Image 1 (tube, one colour):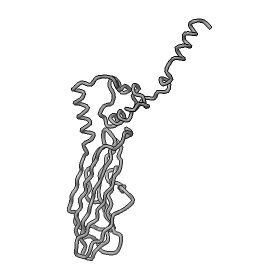
Image 2 (image 1 turned 90 degrees about the horizontal axis):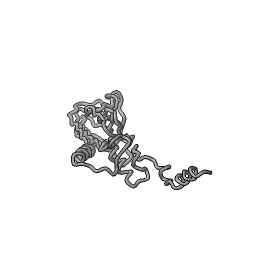
Image 3 (image 1 turned 45 degrees about the horizontal axis):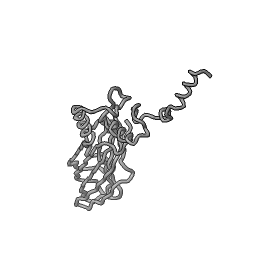
Image 4 (image 1 turned 30 degrees about the vertical axis):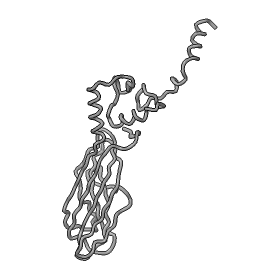
Length: 218
């Protein structure tokens, strides 16, 4: 074996093993997935606080940040952490409980930039001349109201006494992905004997915020 081959073998033997097994963190080649900071880097990337520096594959972890860059980072972080609140409050009037209508429907909300989690708080009050047993649940639609998906399989129930007002409330949460257009509503139906609602009022509040945790995949 000549001297040149011996020198090359020595270099390969002395090279750190970590260089061969290191994996990029959140798609950044200059941050190791084994780094204790990987979760932090992934968290801010998934909320579009920063998507890289010189290229989308570079994070530049040792590069200084200017005050202008800091302002941009803080602005994006504030946007990511400020929830969007949608509210619908209506006097729905008479309700045919057999039709299981969806009331208090909100306008469509586009989910952009990063995945979101929706928390919803809904209630419906109604009155019936003969009394009624009702079920209420929060629902959402991603196809313009052509079909509705309940937030949870469990419904909220209430008895509306004859010629009096009764109320049922519901809460729930759902995760949404970038690119979806979603609207929310309250579905009300019958659970037992009784007449329809002669008058009703509904209130729905949806809070759309960033998902918790580091791994909110884009």
